[in-house]
Amino acid sequence: MVNRDEVSRLMSSFMYKHPHKDHSKAFAIGVAAVAVLFFSLPLLVPPCASDQPSVGSIAATTPKIVEGHAYDSLGQPVDGASVSVTMKHSGGGSTTKYYTTVSGGYYMVTFTKDEWNVNDLIDVVATYDSETASSLDNLADSSGLQTIDVYFSVPIPEFSGMSGVIVATGLCASMVLFLSRRR
Figure (spheres, helix red, strand yellow):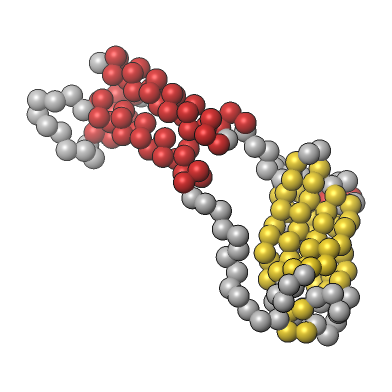
């Protein structure tokens, strides 16, 4: 069991202490501020459309097999997921192939040499029971085989979006009040 006084003593040894002031409230407010920032950070960082560099395409000379697995949030394979694999051509346009995962969550699609180019972008999107998993903007390499796995993550509705910030702020405020009244 963690001794609260020992943890408090250890944490306070890292902070400057004014000889006539109680620092437990300042510490609690600092912890609350860090928690609010932690839960709201995903809302502050906008998603990027693509982090891949703009690279010219090179004509393919062989078919391209895109394969992989679909996994759930615990790392277990997802059998029966619908998978779409889209080859986005650098000059515009795209080609999409579909597959349903089999035993072990495995999928495989084949693009003919006329349906892809080296440096095209590959998007893999899997759906299962209204959940979606994706791996977007993968750069097509020159090999004939490319493996791209997708992972389903189960969202926690209580902590998604702005509601998560509100809940986290309320929890942090409660913690500050609790810690400030204990002294």
